[in-house]
Length: 581
Ligand code: WTA
Image (cartoon, rainbow, N blue to C red; front, side, top):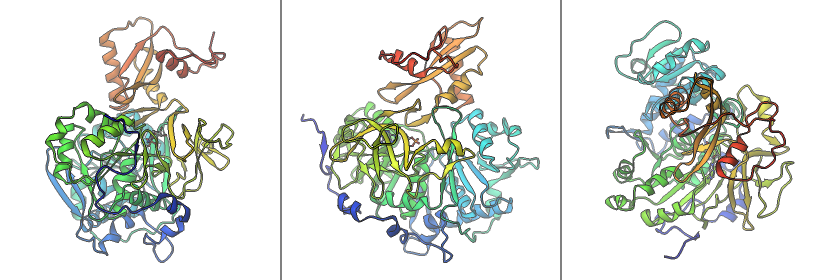
């Protein structure tokens, strides 16, 4: 078979004309100010992202349109209209008000993928609180860092997840309320006070006066990993929703007829920007699928909900590929009209496979927690060069720069940088102005990715410039894993790297030096993996462990992960002049 390297148009015919007919023309005439009128502004010039995502549609033809289709782990389906979403998020905003939550307070969601995610996230925005999400896979160590650093006032969770909060609540002086979504909740008056979600929602009024927010006021924050130190709180403002809205419209090509499924968990920025804000601001019908990844149930979800637009990630695609080409033949994918991917490099083979199985090419999109929305992407109307991330969104100026911030020419590898000032750019790192400033070089935001641009203006991803690990699309900081590892009684020191993996992109690999009196064994290895899974996060444990006598360190005592990685991959060791004797 002839190998496809470029897709000029989707293999299936587009049943709807794309919102952006021609990229170059749109780019030339584009300005953010023109998009502002698409959103509803209050008469005082203020805005609220939740109002635009939900309430606005209740005043137009979308009032009784289904906003959310939820499928539970047991296969039960619930549907919520835009009016339902408005009422439920208003109720939650009233619950927060009753509890004394005010503008600027931090409200954290520690929830599985259930409708309460939407009600509480949007309710928090309506009252002007800063909403944040936590992966339900997080363990106490990851939770205490995030809830502690942010000074969270309230956490909403379930009875199954609450014990993890209970373990650390004494270390969280700001935490005043734990709202629990479940049956027969035992409330308690001791701080942090336990509140019964359903009971309070029943009592709450469905009328709420949405807080008018300055476009620059913060709306949500998300902790994400860097190369050193603990995870950092990336903060976003209400104005960001304009870009989440417009990128959803042009890149995901949402039309009123569409049923859209973003497979990302809400613990990840994708689940917020493109699970909640972007699609709802477009008035779309969004699918929320609670279950874990499983090829059969994923395929049947597409068929059952007649999904037309599907946003997923390379690891999931590769896992579907692994499940074979016979399985998808059992399902009807004729409703699908456009599919896309995010989070890690999308290999050409995955795109070719998508064409074979779905008759559609996965369109790769590049962005980060820090960028708030998709910035470099493949558009429905633009030819795809397989393996390329595509071109910058209209209004975005992306470039490859050297370490001093000088722009480099075509085909030269360098730092992927974005000219600062786009609406959904992070507005800071929580309580860490110093670290925030270091992310910029002059007018450039330095992304931490290495890439190159070709003569046609397409960007090609090369790798991370730092030690950040991307495993199954999740961003993991090696320092966080190392910190937990050294708490294990048998471990003296640990160094952690991302090791290339054909399915997961990378896996976490730990090099461990044991304390005197401990010896390597399969049991110990299992025990260490379990230790990290339980303390930090189920997705952040080292799938591979090598026991070593000692770790390569700089003279100042820093573990040289670069060297560990080079050795592991059999690459040249590079400059070792700072290596400890
Ligand atoms: C990587 C994800 C290659 C990249 C929304 C980036 C990608 C980091 C792509 C951000 C892509 C994201 N191709 N690499 N299409 N998309 N990445 O903050 O290294 O979890 O810097 O946000 O993921 O990860 P984050």
